[in-house]
Amino acid sequence: MSHVVIIGCGVVGAAIAYELSQVKGLKITVCDRQPPAQASTGAALGVLMGAISQKIKGKAWQMRETSIQRYETLIPELEALTGCKIPFNRQGILMLLSDSSPSLEAIDAWKKLVEIRHSQGWHLEIWDTAKLQNICPQVDVYDGLRLHEKITGAVYSPQDRQLDPTALTLALVEAAQQNGVTFKFGVTVLDAQTSTPESSPQFCNQLETTEGKIAADWFVVAAGLGSTLLTAQLNQLIDIRPVLGQALQLRVGHPLGNPDFQPAITGNDVHIVPVGGGDYWVGATVEFPSNGNEIPPNQELLESVREQAIAFCPELATATILRTWSGLRPRPEGRPAPVIGKLPGFSNVLLATGHYRNGVLLAPATAYAIREMIISQGVGSKNFRF
Image (cartoon, rainbow, N blue to C red):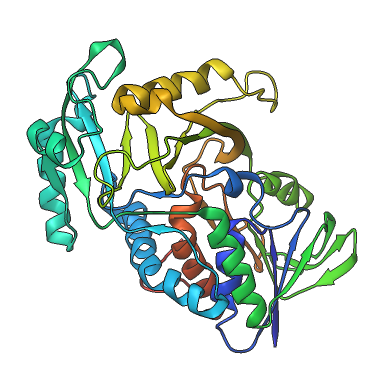
């Protein structure tokens, strides 16, 4: 029986654990220095921008498509296994367009994307302001943007989704535990022991942790920002840098607009996410470190996000701020996100990290990719070649 150790239990590590728990002949251990769903997962808004994204080919689109499709079966599967409810908004994503949008959002570009998605089996709709106002009266189409820009329409993606990342991660952990996965929380990796055969690649034998040594056949690094130190201990540094995101939970007390149609609304990189009970998540800022890796939350930027949300939906101006929170997103330095594949120089260390702002979106596809690498001894399937 092969032993797989997964380091990190955010949404990506938990998804990998659950996916691998369904493979016969694997013993799986997950280690994390924190409880599950902390760090970037606990701060995410769970907006799954698949069909509405501008990614149309290659791995970037393929992983989005795989994940969006998998979520349709994964959520009911996990709810049945665990008895836990995972908030899952199936009413789509509505992207607001403005008269000063960049060329990428020009109406011709959106029309082309609608055609491409149709050919791929996905549905997108372009709404004019009259349709937008009729269906979503909470949106101010006349002055819905700062600087008195006007909303010119919207793109509606009925097949994209939004979910609660923390509830999802906890359900993945519970379901994986039911399938025999061992979870060790409050455990920090201190060092790694490797053997260097006469011919490369190297082989990682075991990890030295605060709970003793853990030997395994495979090690999967899904530790987000912690991946930098872990890979440095193997002398193959993968540089992951933090990017801070702040968000708010606002209470209006009633649904905005039509109570029977509550999609996630996005525009100008600001999300307004209905979470039930007349509450909305609003976010998120994008804040880079200015000195080292320290990023103190900028309250002015958070207020700017709130003001933009109010410009979209004026009723939010009277909403009560229930809470604010922040988290650090793991962004790979000098390379595209995410980082999935073998750690250079090693035959049995796999990377599933650096998802930046798409960890929740890409978790199922990442789990599939890692499973394929392990069961095929490093040879990707026809769908995933890294």
